[in-house]
Length: 440
Image (cartoon, rainbow, N blue to C red):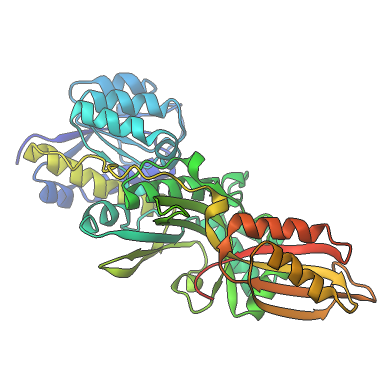
């Protein structure tokens, strides 16, 4: 067996500690798979004196000098599980330019400035792997960038945030409101003390950018992704979805297609949406993730599993470590970034979708005709209309509820329709607006 492949580990929190444990527990198998043992050259942390329990590691390996560790000549692979943009970006660019391979789980950095990392990898001749950045242990990114490289992917639809999926699943199952479901998620450890990144869609948007970049051979950043969170989803929305045979999920949707002028473009968005219970993603509950991929030759594929947590994420990290270690021993590197298509990103207003709109209206003759006229003026076709007595939000004599589902239309036309409806004197309030996806 050849000389060891030596790793610099940046970060030793929940994921980093699991990486250390798996390296220790599976050392013999990993060495056999690679053809050389893996050794930890050092671990960069913020505080050396922190209690790390029974972690099977020599305390002398800990250092607060991450950059110094990266620059050491005896380091072959840098594994980054710190997160954030800086100083992680500087560390990884330094490592890649020096010819070291990098394995990272840093979705925020990849979505913010993945191009800089890919450019540095080409400059230095090392590998850049990041399977753990999206959907935890689910093997997803490598199939997109390798297995499906001979196909044309047309659409990727996914549930890529476990916290929001737990919250929405709980609301669907129990009828609870958002605040109650979030409190339960926090108590069970699914939600952080500050859940903003999850519930406002920032986490999912970063992952959507990474998926779109790989699927469509185009550099897509977090700023290119239209983002909406789930904080405005109500128990009434969930009940209305159930009445239609649907459930509500926070979806990341990346699609490739022609715009109005026939130019090939990419659309990338994250928002809550109703999907029919018959859709494969509808049954994905709890904190699980799933991604539905549609390709011209392969057809429909779905990837499902645990999308977060120390052990699942560490599993994906180690899978990448094995790949880059084998490449180094063979004297080869993985294929570089494929961004040849360089497709423009379509504005959200041009994305084709459908709306579910709930209106509290005056209960008198001519109301439906007036409402339908607004849709017609914006060239939006109505698919279904349901009318009933006013509920809790309007709740008075002489008032009613209209629930309208549209046919597919540009999002800008749908949004303009809603805006005009808000100004009608017969509309007491627009109680709810949700997009509808999945072929309902």
